[in-house]
Length: 482
Image 1 (tube, rainbow, N blue to C red):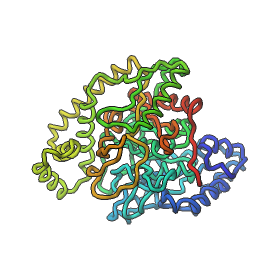
Image 2 (cartoon, helix red, strand yellow; image 1 turned 180 degrees about the horizontal axis):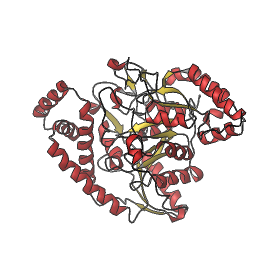
Image 3 (cartoon, one colour; image 1 turned 90 degrees about the vertical axis):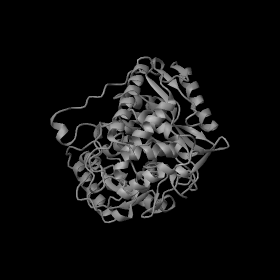
């Protein structure tokens, strides 16, 4: 059992199905690791060990009796704090919701449990899921297991940190601004942002919120590409009333062999300059792909301006998240916009304009989005995938002062607004495209990942490329000390 906690979910399921390890035995191993290691990183912030033990025992009984078992039967799993899990608080890190105990499971928890998973805990998030750090006054700060002075990312930071430290077998997060992809990149694990609306977000809401949020998606985090594919197969598909009318059938990977793929590769962009060591890691991957026979074109990207891509995404993102704001905050936003100094960063102006725009204005921004989506479709007629950074740098040091849009990070020795890297978040996300992050090594001693962007509904192509990179180039590697 010494290293079993770093095996992938698919490997753990093989051990469980072969009865080389029991579900209760595996759960106790992970619970023991949480006891020993979680205090340092604060990734898992809620557990129900008694219920989990009962579920693990039931899984063991099913196998002993020769009964049918699910694809995750007996696997210890955690989920992001923002997902409803019956009997647990869903707070999004907001103190006013500390007593908001879920009565039912979210769609994600429901589907994991239907597959036999033992969902034993929930993982840390930032306040309102709105940061690339994961800290809040209810649950404290989550740290990166590779370097406790640095962020694990956000908003699914606890999920990625728990996986990297070997505290769970599988997780699930959500993503509207790289909240799956950013933590996967910072912590050296795998994450998949699905095509918009193929995975139900039911049960990831605060009280009074009912409608799906534009751009936001739900997806898995794991220690292997195969795990992502397994989890996506369980999570994706129609939910609720939609199940009466449609079925999801994702197309297979566009190519089977690495040498048949044609990919564009971006190392950086003026919208969000990338740390040179990270650029070098991506360039090395591109060289390996080319050496394996893939057609690689450096700098290939859709024909529209990245300035426009960033502007449209930011406006639609901040409009989508504005529904959470109180009337008092909205009034303040209008006042702030009227007084905004000319030298304010572009993001600040866009945020305030988006929060206060008329619906007629939103319709026009949405129309511009669809024009850019057509540009992506045209580009994918020539290329199978676009490979690019997931963020501007490896994980940055904790910085909890003030508002996120006022903070900076150091990139290539210069100060950069931390929100600039929303470009790498929104390049696919604002346009409903799937993207997978897979680890590709270290830069400056910290893990970095490659973002693999595919055509709408080509999720399996993204995952296939992640698997090829994992198989031939770079696998998950754990941090020292865990």
